Length: 249
Image (cartoon, rainbow, N blue to C red; front, side, top):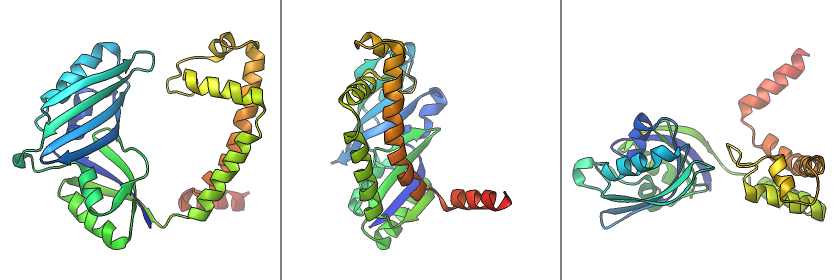
């Protein structure tokens, strides 16, 4: 398997020009596929203020490759909108969903792609180098493509890292697990945050300082487990920078 990470400016697609009209908005493509000429897409759009929700949905619905856009839900506190899109890929637009190109070349996304500043960001697993080459060639017909990384994933290292994280979670006390779960569910770790320590304490029998201490201890245990995985997967340039810094000392 090959891990293939790339960016594409998808010409004639809504992703290319969305930020021209809505510069603060970022989108995650939950899914997108084309069947018999019809494109079905679901996106999570963040950074959408309440007064910009309807204009965003209207803009998406009016895009040349779209025939309809519908607001599924909106969270005002998180400024997040879920929008369903449908469109007909007219041959004159000379484009198609990126996911179509990936799937027919046996490349599979590992995380939902994101859209920022007119660029789609994709992380995929490909079966072999031949699949990557064919995929890259076809993607270039859709727009400008930049490869960020191409490497063979270390599955053993990844599984070891997951085991360490799972062990760290299991090592949390029942109270730490309870408060951490409440914090995640309430949006404490959202960006921007949907609640603060005081809000979490109001949901719990403990005071603010106790809730904060439980969170700090929980975070420390989990981040220590995650740390080794991050270090092992850091870019070589970062490792080189650390080594040079150490040598200079």
